[in-house]
Amino acid sequence: MSNARKNALSYYLNTAVTAIVGLVINPLLLNALGNTNFGAWKTIQRLLDVGSSANGGAMQSLKWVIAHRSKSATDEEKRRDVGAALVVLLYWSPILLAVSAVIVVLLPTLMHGVPDEDIKMVYVTGSILGINVVLLSLAAVPDAVLIGTNQGYRSVNVTTVVSIITNAAMLVAANLGWGPEGVAATIAVGTGVNGVLTFHVLRRRVSWWGYGKPSKDDIRRVSKFSGWVLGWTFVNRLSLATEVIVLSALAGVAFVSSYTFTSYVAAFALSICQLTTSSLMPKLGSLVGVGEWEQAQTVAREARELTIALSAGIGCLVILLNGTFVALWAGHDQFMGQGVNVIMAITFVQFAIMRTDTQIQDTGLDIGLKVIFGAVMTVSALAAAGTAYALSNSIELMFISICAIRSVGSIAFPLLANRAIHSSTWPIGRAAVAALVLSMSIVGATFIHPTGLAEFIGAGLLSTGVLAPLLFFTTLSSSTRRKIVNR
Image (cartoon, rainbow, N blue to C red; front, side, top):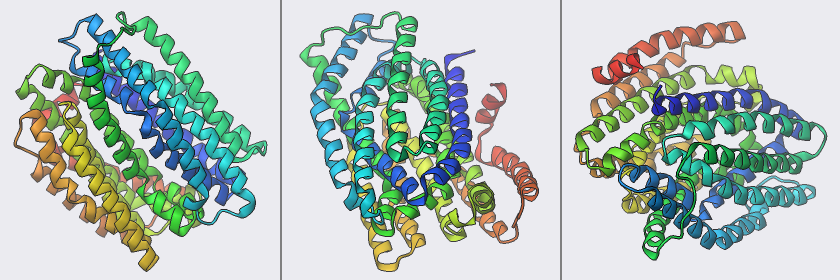
């Protein structure tokens, strides 16, 4: 079995396990922590996730540099790349700590609806998760090298096992009455254990592993790329947190709880789309690195088609069945309404497709324009969403504003990605078919109203049975279909 296939299988397994664990854990944590504390915990996590991008982007840079130079660099040069990335990480550590501290201090301002007696809890939870941000940066070192050498499945398998244990411990902490603080401490311990185990795997599986003394040119090369990676990491995480930031600051943390459950399937689907294409990126990066443009264009086309098919299919299921799913899972009061659900599904499909093009451009190691444009787009989307909600108190208008601003990126990011792979094509026709199928699902949702578990399962099987072959034969080219079948 090829490493690419092992990567894909491990990523899917991790995503499936994470989704199943979340299905079990989230309602139980909501019950143990309460609606407000659960929403506060989710908000703190998301805000500090945005702040964690201030680590300099060294490990993201290392992943792509190793993949890009896998066929052209000597072992000593690779070790110097590792050394350069560690130096960059060290330089950025004070900034990472400072940014995390500022976010923790500002948490009460960014979280509407938290009772005064819970402010201390917010600070303590934020401080612990801030420490976890530092641990994540250190744990990313072995992970980056394994991914760059096309062995990401090894680190993912470790993460999957540790994640199950950590989530079980989180639930125990919550039920013991330790609150969000105890849950946060459990996460930090899990991160440390995961890093140690992944490092052990790295030492056994990568023969050239080590770090050499980098030259100024090595540090300059990694710093230049990692600076842009830092910018893009911040942009990407801010994009993912846009809805949570607006809801938390303006509507209240209780709305974040409802959003967590309503958006759960869409967030899970976004991970599926990203992991599907991520398994192809090391190969694409290697092809771009040696200038094999025709093969690179083929891999990029496959990634785009797979994203369109997957995102459209899951988006349709969200439109048709998410209301019933959330009601059965967490209760009717946690569903934000069909209007929000439809717009959220469309926003998910849009973001998934854009994200694939941004991944494609990463392989060319020239991401400056992408970062600049993405920053402007994301800040504009955040401002538009906040303004729309402040003026109307409408979550639907908030999502529509985000989708409208991002539509510009739906044009710009494919153009930038094509520059990286020397291409001039994009599957517009297949995307149009996907849009048509989504529209049909919106209409169909007015007639499909499963009310119990049996009806939900039946509607799900019927919908999947119709959507899967429809999208398989209309959004995927014959060559992509053959590769899927042969795999």
